[in-house]
Image (tube, rainbow, N blue to C red):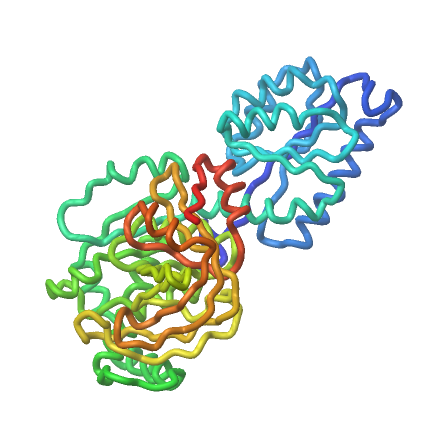
Amino acid sequence: MGESDPWDGPAVVHKVFLAAPKPTWPYPALDVKQEAAGINARLADLEAKHPGLVRFTGGRILYTGDDPGPWIRSTAGADAILVMDLTSNTPSQFEALEKIDTPMVLFQRPLTGWAFMRFASYIQRGKRADMINSSQYGDLVPHLHMFRTIHHLANSKVLVVRPGSPDASSFQAWTEQFGTQVEFPTFQELQEAFRQVSPKLAGEAAQEFTKAALKVVEPKPPDIVDSVRFHLASLEVLRRRRANALTIDCLGGFRRNELPAYPCVAFSKLNDAGLYGVCEADFQSTMTQLLLTSYSGKPGFVSDPTFDTSRNEVIHAHCVSATRLMGLQSAPSPYVIRTHMEDEKGVSLQVELPVRETITCGKFASPKTFLVSEGEVIANLDDRRGCRTKIVTRVADARKMAEGFTGGLHRVLFYGSYSGAIERMGRLMGFKTVREC
């Protein structure tokens, strides 16, 4: 894993300017080429100030009446297209844009033209499009992150480990929509990778992991070594397959003796490192993390929610949690080393998560639907009931969320407010956002 990994590269964003050969609006003496040069300079400055997000290409001025064929071909390979109108009277250019399925964003400054009407129609019709109507170039920055997210999903690979013969066709819709590749390692491959990890290296890593904990409650040292050894094995499988996400039928696999250890610690460490480890072979939650971790720079917490409508609260609980939920570069949260709750075996983490913070709770219900809500973390809950890590969140309408619940049990929590960004990414990537409460 390194900077050359395809999912970590900047998005390729193709620029195009729209103009009439002889402007009338915004004024007849407008120097179109000079106008485009000034915008290009500002965009180059944005690219430099936000390294790693985008690489701008293109920059052609597409005039009314031009043959759009060469320009359309020049957009091949772009993750997104940034459209900027310089004048009014550009109808033929929109005929070209209609032929392209690449996500596109209109950046329209005041007093240029009326391209916003076309993009409003695109948005209403569900074309992969969004727009920014602003005099401030800084308003482009959230979309730079969105462009990178598009690139990230298109170049990611998810490894799904579960029993039986894999049905690749059930994942095809996801690949067609987002570009994300899926492969199906076997439990035997994980076992072999585990055996190949040096016991001495695993022991040293386990000592470091234990030393950083607040305390150890139930697990014995050999169990901790096995859990850390499984993390090292997981990294090796990801490296061999050039993948960045791993989701496993962990409960069944451990009970069938097909896993040498529960992967709770491995998944926590993968998520803390900007990779993805998701329990229970939950592909939808994995895709949710791919979307929002790449956009926000924060790991997600996959949870089993329960409700207390008398207090308008949702309690989120799970035995897998990252420790850097405030950001991949943030200080880790304190954690206690525990067993997996449901069978008192293996090793998991009880993480003390930040409180008095806004969270976004969401999940892909399908490639076309994303469920989302927001709330505030008001407490950590230390109780023998439920999974090891538990947080209490206050939401707008817990009853509405419970009574309208769909899409399977899991939800994924991210620290921060991202509902608006998810809606805009949905426009660009072809999914609808549904507010749960």
